[in-house]
Image (tube, rainbow, N blue to C red):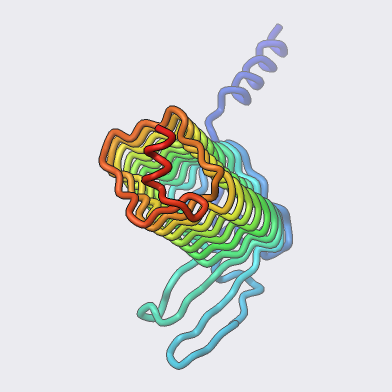
Length: 293
């Protein structure tokens, strides 16, 4: 009976124990040793700085500016983890003259993680699939100038601060299904070579797609823009689906180019619309609205 009670006590302790802690330095050591990184239900303590790995090398030198590159050559998988401090894959040092960049050669996965510090992946190249799903970013989330060679999945994320994907390049599909942008969603000059999926996305700040290039399908079906929806100078080469989309603020379609495959069924424009010099397959956008709404 005593042995049975002891076993039950041990099992209970195992089941109900809280998440453990992993130091950022331990993760860096794993990467430098070529070991796959995989953690679940852990608290990551300390800045996870991926910019000065063992394989770091100088890739550019121009005057006072030095540029260094580190490469993560192992797959990374975090599930239900909390990052207490910054996750750094890009930084400036030396009075912002020197830049440190990190590229990722294997699959990168973050599922249901919480980022309490900054998450900075500026200028990073991702060679394989990138998954950030069900995550919450409390501070800066920066993928400016990043390149995604395979699918980038950012579905069901919550971005409390600016989500910066300015000048990012998605060579395959980019998924932001049911993402919630509490601040600006910055996709200015972003290139979507494959389809961009924003179904049921919610924009509480400006949805900034100024100069964005959608080479394939752009799906904003059932998306909600609480403030400005800015598509000034954006280009839609194929389907642009705004079915049942709600735009409470200003809609900026100035100089926007659409193909003849535009869907506005059930779209609610609750604010003003600027469609000066906008075109549907070379024809007037205003004419299209008059004929189809």
